[in-house]
Length: 591
Ligand code: F6R
Image 1: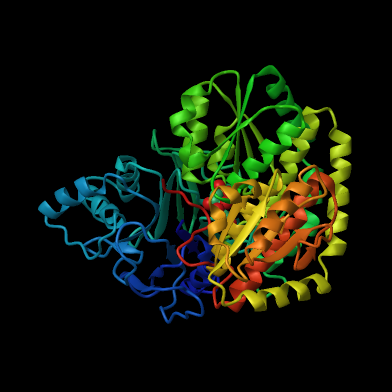
Image 2: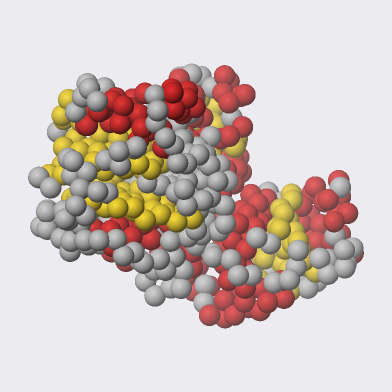
């Protein structure tokens, strides 16, 4: 939710252009508007360029300079206009502020500031930050004025401030991510919401913790504890990502690249977390309740986890993290709460995990992005390490999380090595199956669906969460209304939606529910539905079949990947941007 990027000591002297390029890599965090501020080489007057709309092919003619700050916005307070785009300046135009988060108490500040004569030029909560700092600067050094202002803000926030006099960037974090990159060789410093923005310059990073601030100027970088306002030691880490991880690598979109990467990422995940999984198994055996939570795609992963646990002989509960609070009081010391999140920054998931923890539960995170807030607050982290997931919709993180939950449940049932073997076999089989022939078949089906208004997806047992994820991928990537139902639910009402030629995807596996699902397919067919089977077997009930690998409980992986690919090609065919669907942002850091 909103992307922040800054450079200090830009070695090209075109800091604004460097920031523009970095922002393009962060656009998945919000694309309502973008903006850049620079302190020009030969002037103390800040220069700003900001516009509503996607950064896309934008260019900037901002003057030369070595220090600049930029932002891509996912609008919360104030419409999508040039004025509401970040950065926001104080009245004296001495400092510029960009922000990721929501200042929950901004209205009280705004009223006071207006009374004191401050002039506002936007409707945003962010602009109060610039004016608050301006007030405080009257009595104290800028750095401390920024610290004090930031501490007065309520909500989850990250800010970065460019001060023209100090020629410094001051950034603070509480709940929204900030990471710094240090390019020692060229003596350049970067600041971003996420690593891909600066990864081509350096892999030496420091992820700020909540309650920390950094001050970066041409002499270097200093880390501060916001509570004490004292400097502390900054210990960097070196990321072992490859540069290709943050690039499209020959694919037309990150989404397509990430879908194909699943051939490797699922198996890679299987080789991680051996020790941690043992710890979680012990926690589960020592406790008496398992709760799985997540939002969106991660919630479907949680739901699939519930079926996996059941197959391992263990009962568990699932909640969408955003609906967990009414039930959180049932969590206690005997509870193991498993929070699933790609970003580890989803506000609803964090709140649910924090609440469970307060009630004494042990909390486990299944996350992809590293250095996240979720990772820091839990007892055990099961990282899935698929590398940066840049397309807004989740694909490779989801299947790696699903594989991790599968392995966890197999370990609970003392079947760790068979579980590992099955995941490795899955990976090999997917690699062979995901070929040109399959893609051509899917493209032909997509052509026949481009002008549809509705498609329906049914599944039973593990194929029910799979159907839900399948439908979500189609909806978010192509804006075609796709709705998933549990196959057994059709006859209780939803079958009224089926008319002649209504496209119906039927997800199935060779399991104990196969015949029941085929009966549901027959019911759809009898009402005129066009039945597209997504399964490892043929059936007279299917008008067409997208054949997926027959892998027992793991058949759902192929079934889901079909949904990801259909979503992608439908998105292209219907004129959507598959990497950046409208109205969405990659990490939803607001409630
Ligand atoms: C869908 C999607 C979202 C996320 C959800 C949770 O493709 O990406 O539904 O799954 O916003 O995000 P994380 O996993 O970062 O907590």
